[in-house]
Length: 419
Image (cartoon, rainbow, N blue to C red):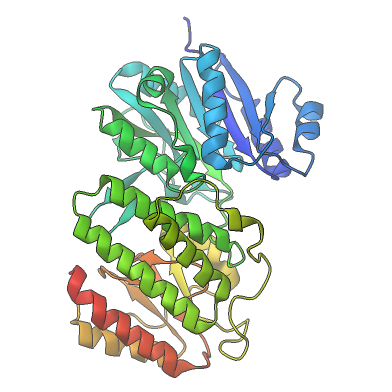
C-alpha cells in the first residue's frame, strides 16, 4: 500500500539538546515515507554540527537570520512545496513524539479532502497531563480555550478520537500542502505567537476543516512564561490585537481590548516595571501604526534583571497571576499551588473588589471562575479569566495600598463592561 509523502519540518534557535531529543524520537516512527527538515534560525550553539554528526540523513536549512517560528516554518513549507510532498508535519523543536503519532495524523487527512490541518494530543513532558488538544476561540473574551487542558491523557481508541477545533498549535500539526499553496503560508510578519491561530482561522474562512486526533500523542517541554523573556509580551500583545482586529466582527470589543492593554501599560509604569511597560507600550504603538514583523528592540530588552523595584516588592515576595492555560507544572518555581482562599466571582463588582481586597491583605490565592476582565498584578503576563483558569497569588507584599487601589480600580472599571 502506497503511503503519502510527508515532510517533517522543525524550526530551531539555540535549542540543540531539545532538537537532538526530538530527532531521536523521530527515528522510531512507524510511518515509512517521510523526510526530516530542520530550519536553523541562525543558532549559535552549534546545532548544525550536532545534527550532522548524530543524524546525518536530516536535511538542514541554515537561515542567515532569525525570522521567528513563522518565518522558519515558511522556509520549510516552501521546501515541501518545491519537492512535491503531499503533507507537511510542523513540530516545535522541544517535543518528543510517539511512534505512531504521524500515522494517525496522516489517516485523518487521508480520510477527507475537506480537512486541511490535523493536530495532536499535546502532553506536558514527563507527565500524562494534557496541555491541549487544539483550541477554540472565545471571540467575546479575546482569548483561546485550550481543549482538555489540565486533564489526564486520553487513551487511544478507534472511535471518537477526532475532535473538530478552531485551531491547532504548530507544536504538532499536519497540513495539506495543496491547501497551503491555495490559501497561503503562515503570516511571516507575526514572527512568533498567534501565528498558528491566525493561519488556522484564515484557512477555515475558505470552508476547510481543522481537527485534533487524540490518538496522535506528543510530549512538550513546556516551561511557561519566564519573567525574563519580556520580548514575548510584545509579540503576544501586538499579535493578539492584530488578530482580533482582523477577524472580530465587533470593533467596539477590540477597542475595549486595546483600552485594557493601555491600562496595563500604565500599571507597569507606575510599578516601576520599566521593561514590561516599554514592551506593552511598543506593542500598542506598533499595532496602531500597523507596524509588524520582528521587533527591533528585542535585541536589547533586558533578559536577566529583576522586574520589580526592590523597594516596592522584594524579588522573592511578589504577586503572581497563575495561568492554568499554560501549564500548572511550569509555575512551581513561583511557590506552591495550594489554594488558601477562593473568591466567588459571580459577585457584583463592589463585592468582588472587597473579596479580592481581602485576599490581597492576607497571603492567599484568589481563584477566578467566571470573570470577564483583564487584570495583571504580576511582572510577566496579561491574562483573561475563564472558568477557574486563573489564580492570583501573593505573599508579604510591600506597598499593599497601591496594589489594593489598582485592584479595585480594575474590578470596578471593567467587570460591568464585560459581563
